[in-house]
Amino acid sequence: MFTPRLYLTVIAILITVLCSSAQVRHVTTVTPRMAGQASSGVEVYEFDYVDVQPQFPGGEHGLVNFINKTRVYPYHAYKNRIQGRVLCSFIVGADGKVSRVRVIRGAADEAINREAMRVIGEMPRWTPGRVGGAAVPVRVVLPIAFRL
Image (tube, rainbow, N blue to C red):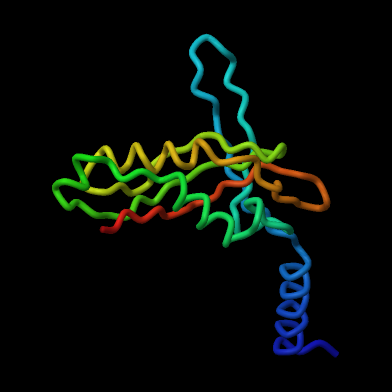
């Protein structure tokens, strides 16, 4: 015979099983900003919620080396001893190409922000992220430090 306590226990177990088996997708839609074209959204996965995360050629060590070799400290910022960290966001496409670079949180000097965007824009193709074995576009957030 079902008692209210047993009934609630069974429901709690069912809810736990159903919730744990449901696959949660963390996807955002990015709409192109081109005038005169139909706006068709592109699904972009978040970095932490893909099966295989996108990877820079050479891994994290290769990424740090690339940034250090490519980054040029803006003269005005260097001369005035301006330092900072620029938090950038970009999308690694299903083909590994970097696109839609933007500054999330910038430094005090706009030249530093532009330099961070330039460095990211010059990155070679990444190994794309994967969901269920298929390559998908993934949003990556990367800090670039400017220290003297």
